[in-house]
Image (cartoon, rainbow over all chains, first blue to last red; front, side, top):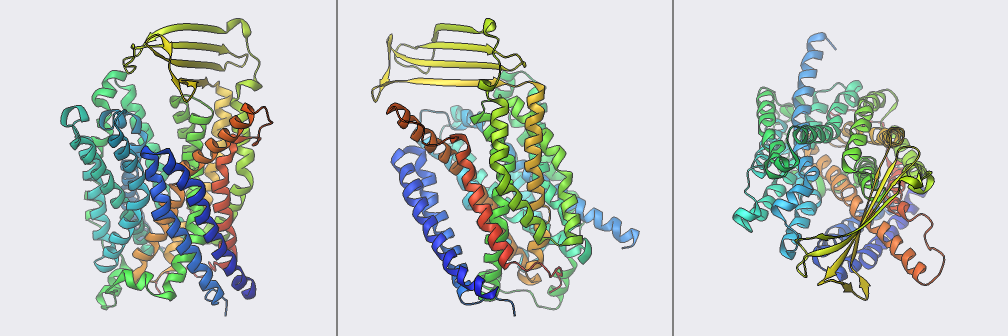
Length: 72
Length: 525
C-alpha cells in the first residue's frame, strides 16, 4: 500500500497541472474574451483557483513521493 | 454521562448551533434576495455596477471566507474559541442589519453598491471564522464516543439557515403585496437578523471557554504563531492538505450539488417557477435534515471515514441518473398535450427599456397537458423603430419558458432532491468531528477552518458557475452542429454541468480512501 501511495504522488502532480491548463485555457480565457463582469470569474480562476489547485495537489503529490503518508 | 452533564452539554450545543444557524441565515438571505437586491443596488445597463454585483457574489463566497478562516482561526487559537465566535456573531449580525438599511442606488448613487459590497465582504469574513469556532468548541466539550453525534447539531445549521431564510422570505412575501415587498419588504429579513443575533449573543455570553483550550492556556502551551505552526510546519501541513483533498473538497461539491445546483437546475434548466422550486427545496431539506444527526451518531459507532467516503461514491455514481430522472419528469415533450387548449398570441408591447421606439413584438404560446402541467413560452423580439433589431446578423430575441408542474411531479422532484440530501448528510454530518480530531488543540481552530472554507467556499462555491459554463458550452456545440446540419455533439447537454462535482468528488474519494486514517478519535492531543 505504501508503494501505491508513493507512486500516486506523480498522478496528483499531473492532475494539478492538467487542472491548471484546463481552467486557464478552457475557462478563464473564454470568460475573459466575453468581457464585462465575466472577467471577474476569469481573474478568480487564474489568481485564486489555479494556484490553489496546483499548489495543493503539487505539494500533496510531493509529500506522497517523499513517503509522508506511509504507514509505519 | 450524568443527567447534569448531559443537560449542560445540550445547552452548549444549543447556544453554539443557534448562533451558527443565524450566521448561515444572514449569509443566505443575500443570495435568496439577489434578484431584488440587484434592482435596488445594481440596476442593469451600467457596467461598473454589474462588475460590483459580480464581485459581491464571488468575493464574499470564495476569497473572503478562507481569509476569515485564517484571521479568526488565528485569533481563536491565541485568545480562545468563545471570544472569537462571539466576535464573528456580532460582525455578521451588524453587517446584515446594515445591508437592510442602506438607501437604494436611486437615492445615494454609487455609495449604495459600494456599501453593500463592503458589508457583504464582512459577512464572508465573519462566516469564515464562525464555523471552525463552533465546531471546535462543541467538539472539545464532547466525550470521545459521542463527538460525531454532538457536532452533527452544528452541521445541521448550514441547511437550517437556508431553510429559515427561505421561510422568512416566503412569509414576508405572503404578508404584503408584491409592490410593497419590492419597495421595502425585502429589507425585513435583513433587519430581523439583529433580533436573532441579540438573543444568540445573550445566550453565548454566559458560556465558558472550551475546557481543553482553557487547560492548554493555563499551562502556557498555546501557540505563539498559529499560522506558522499550521501551514509552515510540514508535520501539520500534510494533514491540512489531506483534510482539503481527501475530505472537504469532495464534501463541498456534494453539498453544493445537493442543495444549490439542484435548485438552480430545476429553475434555470427545467424552467420551473421560483415559488415551486422553493417549495420543492424546503420539503426536501426539511425531510433530509434529521439525517445529519443520524450519520453523525453513526460515525461514533462505525467510524467517520467510511460514511463520508460512501456518501461521495454513491453521489458520483448516481448524479447522472438522478438529474436525468428530474429532467425527464418535467420535460413537456414526454407529456400528452391537450392541443385544443393551446393558445398562441402575437402582440406589440410597450417596453420602457427599449430606447429605439419603446415597443417590442411579443409572441406568447400557452400549452396545457393531460397531467395538469402548464407550459408558457414568451418570445420577445426587440424592435428598432418598427423593424426587427439585428445583432451579428441575427434578430435580437429573448425567450422565457415556464413549466408549472403538477403535484405528482413536484413530489418526484422532492424525492430526487431528498436523495441528494442523504448524500449531503453522509459527507457533512461527521465532517466536523473528523476535522477536529485531525489537529492538535493549540492550532486546531486555524488548521481545520482553512481546509473547510477552501473546500466549501472555493471548490463548492464555484460549482454553480463552472457547471453552468459546462452546460452552456455543450449547448453552443450542439447549436453549431445543428446550424451545419450535423448530428448533435453532446447527447444530454443539461447533464454536462455534473462533470465538475463528479470529477472532484471521485478524486476526493480516491485520496480519502487511500490516505486517510480515521482511526484516532481523541481531541486532547
